[in-house]
Amino acid sequence: MDQSLFLYNTLTRAKEKFVPLNPPNVGLYVCGPTVYGDPHLGHARPAVTFDILFRLLKHLGYKVRYVRNITDVGHLEDEFAGEGEDRILKKARLEQLEPMEVVQYYTNRYHFFMDKLNVLPPSIEPHASGHIIEQQQLIRKIIGDGFAYEVNGSVYFDLKKYNDTFGYGVLSGRDIGDMLSNTRDLEGQDEKKYPLDFALWKKADPTHIMHWPSEWSEGFPGWHLECSAMGMKYLGEQYDIHGGGMDLIFPHHECELAQSTVSTGKPHVRYWLHNNMITLNGQKMSKSKNNFITLEEMFAGGHALLEKAFSPMTIRFYMLQAHYSSPVDFSNEALKAAEQGLSRLMKGMFRLALITPGEKTTVDIEKILSKAEEAMNDDLNTPVLLSHLFDGVRIINLIDEGKESIQKEALDKFRDFMRVYVFEILGLRDENEEKLELLKVPMEMILHWRKEVKARKDFGLSDEIRNKLISCGITIKDTKNGAIWEME
RNA sequence: GGUCUCUUGGCCGAGUGGUUAGGCAGCGGUCUGCAAAACCGCGUACGGCGGUUCAACUCCGCCAGAGACCUCCA
Image 1 (cartoon, rainbow, N blue to C red):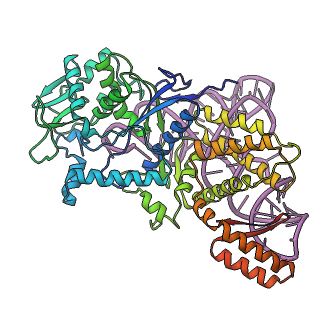
Image 2 (image 1 turned 180 degrees about the vertical axis):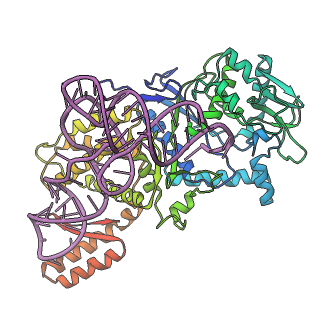
Image 3 (image 1 turned 45 degrees about the horizontal axis):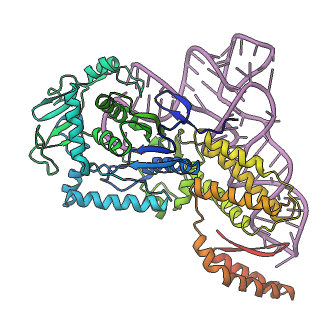
């Protein structure tokens, strides 16, 4: 069995063995958020997906540089209408704020909620607004190579010429001829030589606040350019992995690929990875449909479609129960099931720490170890990994009950394995951990006292103690080996 | 309309040409002063219709339904 990592590459539509360009270094670029609104469930999916990849690559011993950008400029409200307004600017005007104040606010919010989800911060988090110079340099390069032209202070990418030279649409599997016939006639595209040409630099109209000087005009960069410029700056002309939501495949990544290919003359990304969407009642969440649930609403409750609040780890666990390339549909029933499943896993982890080693080993740990490794190496198959981790939980419970036993050496290995996969690779955490630690000593005292009460068969009092604790969220269980306690 | 994907037991969700995914919920049992938890056992599922094959849920075709992209989106 080949224990190499295999990843599904959108570019080749196949699972490929992952071979870094410059081992042990790995360059990973992921499209980050546009910070003009509160982070919602849709932002959580790529963040968690590529957090798992980041964690796994590090676990496999790679030295990873993970770049995830902040888009804070240049995305137009309506690119093809020509009169588009920068979204951040629009939001700023509506809220009577400085544009950078909006950017800062939502960036902070994004970080706050990503931390709740236990998403590790990337190695570099560059802002598009901080890389105007690099983007302008890239435009000059593309003009110099003859693949862009200037009209009235705006610069457009010459898609027809690119298509004739390199072939456009390789990533999304599109035929540019098809696209031509399907392009609607919209106002303001007369500047372009070809309707599908996209802006590299856009002249700012007088109402724009965010603009920068250039030899073409006072303006701002086109919306595909920042990822090309920043990816190249921090990861080099060629790098290993580029990720993002699959809704970005076209046109965003296709255009980015075109720009980068022209400017360097070589393919800039080896592996393109795309996570699937989150749906709500079978519909994709999106700005235009106005059917998204923010992470704040998710964690605190209060959204009309939610029966209750769901914790960050429940959300993370729920997403990991599906493969990243499958859509995930949110429903109350499914989330409640995930909550229970996560609780089972965490209780197992809690118990694993308390197990005492036995005389002999009667369980097969090695099998789970290799299966877990296999699952993650098979294109990050987290649902299958979880099924093996639950097998681990069953083993823990059986040992705990005395039906199986494990020697010290094997137990240490087992503990290490579970810790690495549950906490380090899947990035789950026990949300009760702090409370558990805090209550440890008082609970020991209470259980000790209750044991005496039970010894003199005062069951009325012992039940009262138990009931009081249940109302505080603490469950007492009288096992053969004495009473233990857990938090829901 | 074009391109593409999906349709698995009550719910969620993997996977494979012939061998148990897993989680949640449910039922029965063991344990227990009771309870809870845990453990054991149980459901024998793969949209419909054909075809290929010794054998298909897994391959092919058609039909039905759902979704994604084609426009900002994670």
